[in-house]
Image 1: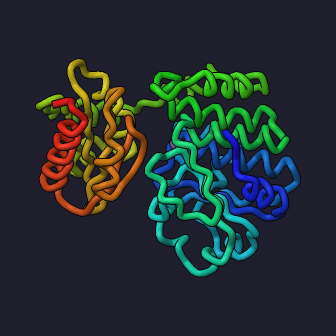
Image 2: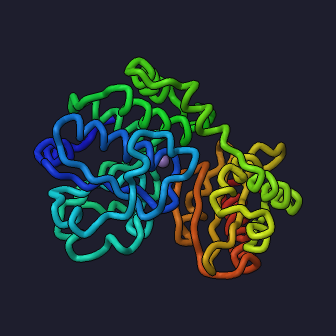
Image 3: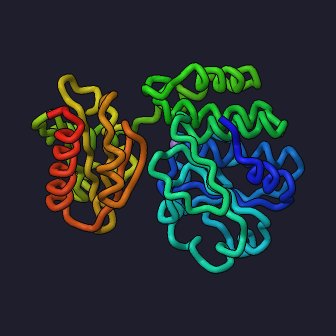
Length: 324
Ligand SMILES: [Mn+2]
């Protein structure tokens, strides 16, 4: 895994950098943002950390999580280089960043989604990496940037969350070696797993009970839906649906799991696939993207409309892949 030379030069020479991660950030987005951000700061650089959305509660223990917010115009104007993390296209960082001052700066994209559309001036995309945080750890190592306990904790959180605690099929020896280096630098694996995986509220459990009550299964696909009414009845937020798709993915005799969530007049879909099945193309075709085994999209329409579209596209993909 080697970052392009022009990426290394841009990062080493810049004094003021703006780092951005994607909307509805997950552990890898926030972990990469903070991990790379702290390392660059400790190397003496001025770094602004930006994300269009707020940090989820289970990640607020990470150092610097409270300072993450939408990029201020001054930060955008001052930055010499913009680094976009874990995002496969411009929509993932919200349209507010697609403006003229943004486009005038060199944009570096660091990502591991196979569906990345290479929208930066310099693109480093490694679809075999288990997490963008793993790529950031490698970049830090190759550039000789500071790696202390704070940096390591953030990056380890990214790797742990994207691999669901080293359980995904892309958890290679290289991933474990990267995690080992982070633990050697002072990050506690027990702390990360405790914080990240022990954060259920009663509202979330209420929502899961309803969502699991509505599960359906047909032709090796299992799915469920979360409507606005369900969220309201439980006092839950759309973030409380995180993990549902992974839970369904553990169902015997299924190839694909799908969770549809009603969100601001649109529907957000999370998809998971068994090893040997690739649903990244289905997600990409419906306006999203992701990995072979974990992908998603957000699309205008009602729950019923999107359900129809995603199910027919998924069954078509399964037939093409010889699974049905
Ligand atoms: Mn990721």
